[in-house]
Image 1 (cartoon, rainbow, N blue to C red):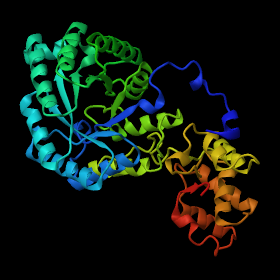
Image 2 (image 1 turned 30 degrees about the vertical axis):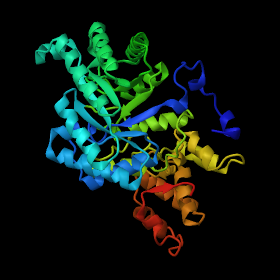
Image 3 (image 1 turned 90 degrees about the horizontal axis):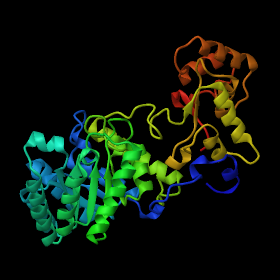
Length: 432
């Protein structure tokens, strides 16, 4: 935000900020096409839809994305192969990654796909680290450590970069984590990913864990990165991701629309909006809505109407006081669309290629009605405005444009100008 608008309000978010990684150093890793597809309410998209999603992720600046878990099925293998071929063919800037359990047999298909296409793939290898998991699976610590050494070194010897992921890290004992971190780092892993598999963490816990991991890496004398992978069971996924960034994490894992098992993962789109508002994301986000809509369509998962930034109601109001303030902002000598974007929203609609919208319902006032007529290019009679408001107060929902048109015609407003009535839209876009 620049110019006079930066002086329009006091920003408490910029006060006493935590010291962490500088903005440009944060890497965003997308898990939509692997972890996201674990949601039982989505469908597995076609490979064409998956590539379109990858292309849009690349457009909004996401630096790395997982293409799947090729050892899990023939379909997953073929999709990963096709997606990697597409990345090479279209010369996308996004770094391809593939998932595997910390097992040599899971990593072999990744190396095979990479060799067939002729470009490297980042290997994301995961293993359970919590005691509760070990008890259920009948694992012991020695077995976990040896399996880690074998699998990570296998991928590294083949020339691939590796992120080692401890599952359920946020409920794992420090001694176990130290042993696993040491085994992975000794074997050549370039990053340690801390996974809040059960959505257990709080922001304070995230900071504690990242500080612990930073010390563990320093003890090994290596320059490994720290990655954060969060889930939303407590409704804290986005807050935890922000805490991870402030604590110094190098990379955040996320999924478009927060898709994922149970209550989902860190929502990538909301994270990017936050980073953009903090001047921490250099890329334009006007393609973000298209990305999210593509994911919604491909996975057959509707976007909730009140979803931040992207739901149909995110920038829509019917409340009279709010509508009046938006109109005053538009008419302000130092105002216009930028001021209207901020008067009742912390997220500028224009940042996402959208507009503020005003509808008319039982909560509306005269400003709502007058603006609708302004969009038609006429100044309405006061009796027309009163008639529309009176009718709106008796209804339960936003009035469709066709009803507004009919009332206006009954009151003698010009039929030629009211012909299409904004193509029967029930809300009125401001600005462009």
